[in-house]
Image (cartoon, rainbow, N blue to C red; front, top):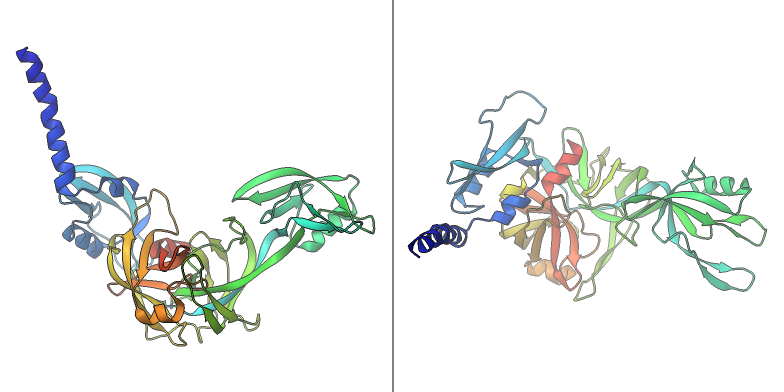
Length: 406
């Protein structure tokens, strides 16, 4: 009987100590577990994170290499080590050291136009010319990207007509991208009024729209914008691009956002006198190089880029030119998520600036890419608005954007 009580106490005591450690030390185990490799940071951000007990009272973080070489342009890789009580290593993640050079802040609406790699299905319904019946395609869906037909590359609309014109069968093998995954399907063809084979869908190979410039690296003109990918508009399929350009954009009005009704910037642009190219379309925005800065940036407004360790709940600002001039608007960061994989919904924030609320109702479509600034650092970009509350939005960490131009 005595031995059973002794063994019971032996197991109970560590459990009690564990719960004390969890509830009174404020250790953020989920944040530590979810933080991913390959983010950007530096000494000052690590010092601030330790000072603020960013991961809990008994957790400290430090760079594995405490010395860095100087006089080189290449970003040096390092590792951050999480230690319990400053002694016991519990996790190690790879990091890159933030560059010292500053970037020019954006916030300016831009027009963008891209040519897709392959063609995009914009409607999977057609009208049967014989009886005016609406036919829905059974094989292809709106938003699909058609890459190949019968193993022939599709670059523009003419390629489809040429392949079908020479087809000896009423079916073709089609390689598509659907929901960001490659897929091979067999498609039955239709015949039009001239007895020619058709796929039975409406397609196009270019996309245009409006977004916001986030930052420009002055030394070489490399820029990031939008904060999320250009998609087909009907799903989250990232559109593969061959080429693209950005242009000056003129605002003609603003549809204010409200509950369950996202607003939008009403803007026009002419595809003439390109300001720069688009070379990448990624989950974290579009990227390329500016050839003409005029009208897009303020050369007197430059910022250092902050890594995700520096982002914390509290006051921050977004930069936008929707009033006609580049201005800062107050927001409150509600949450800065640490995820096991990259995401364009890392930062959750609320618009608190009365001027912006009066002007737009909060975050509206077209503001994607607006810089998020905290403690005089560019820490992110606006990506999405809450459908249920236009005063709240999401943002992507700026270091994920920085990684695309490094």
